[in-house]
Image (cartoon, rainbow, N blue to C red; front, top):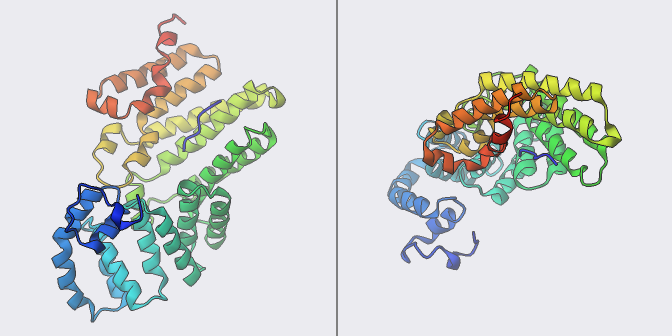
Length: 358
């Protein structure tokens, strides 16, 4: 079967490497960060700064505090102080939606604290149920991090209903539909597989049609290269899966549809290669999207083209693409190759095929 892409809470269980004199408030905060020791060090260094600024915060309203938080994160890459300002903004006005929303985003991107991010985003949509981006982010969190795909899909539907031009919401809904299609393979309910995969393709197409490289700057942190290459790669993979299914699964075998989907996927993989970053560019990122980008670098496009040509029985052309991916991979530093060995699976297994004369 094909592959589909896609802390303890008590203070007395703090990691033993932390000094016993660590401030309790800092320790509780840093429990939710992926780098506990680094967070403690950073927070401790900034504690005096944070405390000194509290005097100035007294005369600022929630909106002003929110603006400062955005600047601290987007301009200075300082999520620790940004969250501190968001906390103050919420204390200043607990009925304002935006501080909960942006704090939820930071808890997803920077802290991987998905449980508390969910609480913030739910509070945000409770206070403002007319914002497409807020429902979109809630649906994204549920679908990709909390294994609540059906519930996440409902939120993404609300997001698109509020803004039918929300390109990123279509992308997330397309991925959610693709996830749901995978559930029906186990039951051999291939009509459902086809239904959700077609819905996924339609969503990716709609996202491409309405795509603009101007979106919420917080999402720029997730998609520093834009997400057009991600869309082409995602749509191409769904088409590839359907093409392989129509060729391989007896219950739905259809040679004409198989060829149609496989050829169409090749066009998407070409566009992925055209728009995608290199692995080196992703390696140089210093933001939370780094691992997210790895599935959709130029290397993977050549690999997927090779896979697709093999299903079309064009093995000589498949081999050319596999060789291109293999050559690019082997040109990388050994440390980088070792670090990302998991993404080589798509081409390394084809060495014996490419040694033949086609």
